[in-house]
Length: 429
Image (cartoon, rainbow, N blue to C red; front, side):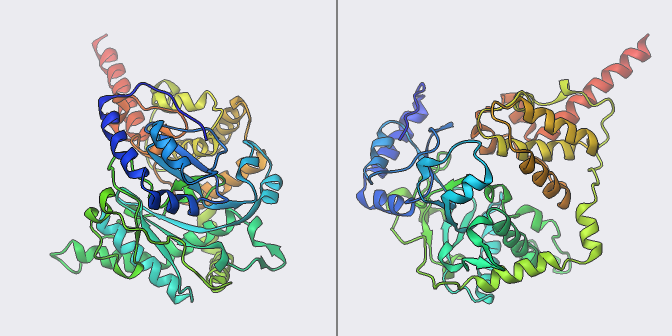
């Protein structure tokens, strides 16, 4: 696997000592190695990732990488014949030929871990309702959880089509189905946490704990079980699905991590009902809902004389074109443009212009699919600057950007300041 050289700060030196001690344990190496077989697996070196594609040959590779500065390991939910044959920019057909399957991976994250616990429990209960007896869950390392339903549990064909070729379409539909079916109970459960008035419902709750759909995209990675987290130094430990309420951050102490299997020994096809119900739900949305899904209604942010000069430096850098991380960059741009109220025609024009600047442009079919997917869903803000989306594609937010937290906040503030200066100048003339 690749090495990543960079100056080492005092903080990094301290954390590296922890990581080397932790990853030197044979049981940790074995747990990570076994889960990552036939998955694309990449080391992270604090602020940057190693080369792609990559994978392990031996369990001891993990410790060797830790000695070179690796702090965590991230793997794909897609399962491949040979991950090393993956090529950036390959066609969907080429990917389908290499992909042997995929796990359903529900990424639950919130700034409040209690919210994440509630949604994790509701998700597992819904999966059980649909006949899935074997579910895996692990702590993300920060304030969320990852829930897994293994590939083995899904039917290999639906209506004569190979299920393995239906990535990310099928996992996305299932994830949206889960979010919709748990929404009401999530509101009720979260509202109970914020009494005093039991009649006041927290309708914002589903927005606070929305499953991360960017994870359900080709070649996207998630933190491997028992990998450490750079910011918290906590381990991504596997939990008992029936004891989520009892979880506390101290249970993820790297010095006390106890090894459990993240992938449950499920039965063949036990997720068939879930998949069929989710597909049926997607197919039979009411005409009103379908129209609503496709309506393009920009968020109500009024920015006069919108100028690229007021875009955050990170967005401007993305717009120059990227060699890697183009799909994550597209996710950022779509949400950014929609959130600042950009006209649909202008938005599409800008997306295609950006793609033409990429050394290896995304396929036009993929762009169209992502635009349609975006229009189907409500407008959400792009990821905050402190999220890994930016660093993961080689874009490091500036201190000023971090102060504004979100790209939309940055644009609104900068545009307002510029507009105010113009009015003051005009009035003083």
